[in-house]
Length: 371
Image 1 (tube, rainbow, N blue to C red):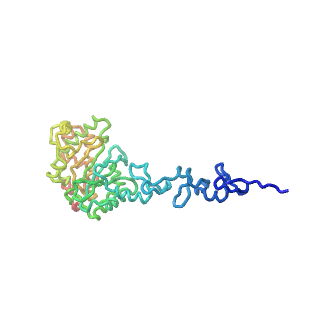
Image 2 (tube, rainbow, N blue to C red; image 1 turned 90 degrees about the horizontal axis):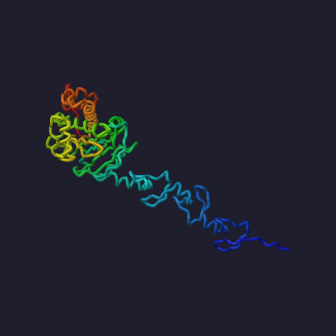
Image 3 (cartoon, rainbow, N blue to C red; image 1 turned 45 degrees about the vertical axis):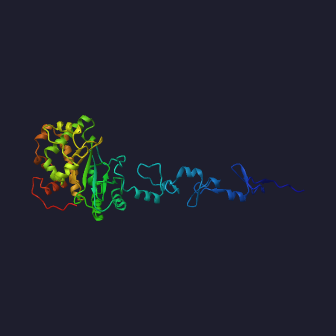
């Protein structure tokens, strides 16, 4: 007697197949041909899925679950990339890029608009942080030059960015995030960056168009506005009382300062100068100590430089002025001479620079040319 063989019908092509040939997939019976033609095995989790649901990464099949958990789509070219390969630009954590598109975008973003102001990243021990804006000129507003400088500056951490500056003839403005003085000295690769800029053909001091602007966090002078104002008033007084010495230190001319960093004018009491400044009686931010920023005060008196010792000495000078403003009373500050002030300066870079500018109590020294 013949035994009738049990069979099933393929849900896709309708072929009659034996039980041994049939595969149940997602509650549907498939013949071997349709199984191979219409389903794929994920090469990450080895699960079988419909071919219409599959994603591909350079020929590798990815099921929807694996794709959602571990893969992204490059917003530049649309290519599927693994999460470990994704790159992100500043402030764009929701926009992944493949390596190639990231490099292209970074080249485009190497020089930001003058108004660009990212969320600050603080490095080093606070609360006294220094943000440097260094203008360099003469070798082009070049993305490749900017990228080369940033590759040095940001090799370990994102310490700096570069902006367009319309006051420059053909140059760039290098801007750091807020760094402590110690971080500027020991971690920020200023020497390498300056050497590369000189190699690229830039100048700063010699360009005649460049400034060195330094921001100091207001919280360095206290948490309360009253405390901050007391210290800032003494800073303004210090600048007015010792204007001639600071002018010499700055390497600027009086005409340049009148245009870009004007003084407030001497008054008998520190608070009187601050009150005068707060009334907006002067040139807005184009003052020697710019008070128009909510989070920082900005020192604009200094001429640009690509000489490392000069940059560090400038930071050290401002650090010393902050100490004087915080720890001396108004009367002690008024009684202090320039000679007394510089005799308390011990940082070697600052002492060297003060001697170079004939502003120190000791003998003069040989002077290296500014760049």
